[in-house]
Length: 524
Figure (cartoon, rainbow, N blue to C red):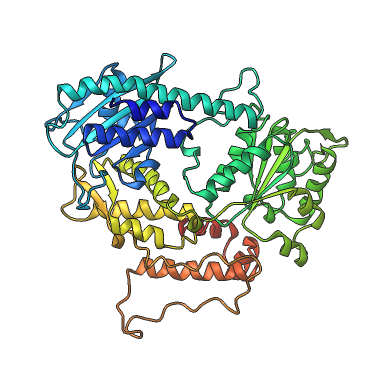
């Protein structure tokens, strides 16, 4: 029987991703079409969970239902829905089918059906073809039968996932949302399927159940805040606040008040009592981002709080009890800061009870394409484009690049390339817009990676020589200036062992302006 491969998989113990991927591959072969996708409904968008026949970065895209009328129509109907070649509704997969010719071909035929689990919409199953007339009456009738099997596969996978979650994470408290206190929005999603990332997520899910302090270690731009949010979301504290403190942005004179609060009259301008971030996070989690930037006097007070669970507002006579889990993050080598006297050894040991290194993007293989897909879809929607895609050469360029600024730099690269592509003459928003390597501009973005903590170059590199002295034509002036600024900032950070405040003084710029400039250049 035709259904045997699918039925066999339903009776087999398979990982969810494998079961759904095999289903997509079988349906593509059965209907002899160009691509099949299973997309799960999450809030207001559809997330691909299995695709066959689409380019690799398609798995990283998130399709807002309101922006894709074909997907919205499929989701709204309880029967098989077809769109033929003359449909005026744009297809979400235009240019995304993985064809041998490598050209951005439009989809000609499309059909899909809504999938339901326990009487509620779960998502959609879509089939697309480059050949007109692929989906006739027989194909529609056959897909209606396969819908039952697809829903069964989804249901079995969900049950297996729930059983596994009950074994490894604490149960939800009454009133908790199953996505956690920080919500399930796609902007907070960690995208990727690489082995290093999956190992990290498993480790975080295990340690989340404890109250141990966690120290997230990683280069600038790896997404430490997202991993902190996941730790909180998977913890027993998920229904309580997660409070984020950017330690690098705290003025030294106000850092103590921000963290621990103050009473009226504690200093000039303190006209009322004010609770600090620790009290705001009571019962929940406090995320200390860039913790290595905290001034030494504040480090001493933070240590006392971690030791005895008490805080004392600035100017107050009595301490207050707080019950807070602390997650800290840094892109600096705190061990070397301890040796240099810039960070307290006792606080370091308190914060690093469970250190978690986050792998840089260059070590995550094809995750770079999935994350690029996420940014491509965001920019497609933002710019009102019909389709925004990467050429094969551009995909390879993304894989080869070292990504000194990691995911934040990738976001800037895709956004800049999309704008460049749209600004070219003859390009309009109704086209399938393809990003080529030249638009990504990675050759002129060969920024020196942020120096590993402890690295001490002899001096900042000299600026590029004037045009004509090297025998090559200069690039655009802004690119040359940006490359020079990246190099100087990176070198200064290396000499200052990652201390942004010291680097700002060395470069003779305001610290807050340096942070803004570094973010624009993809260094933060």
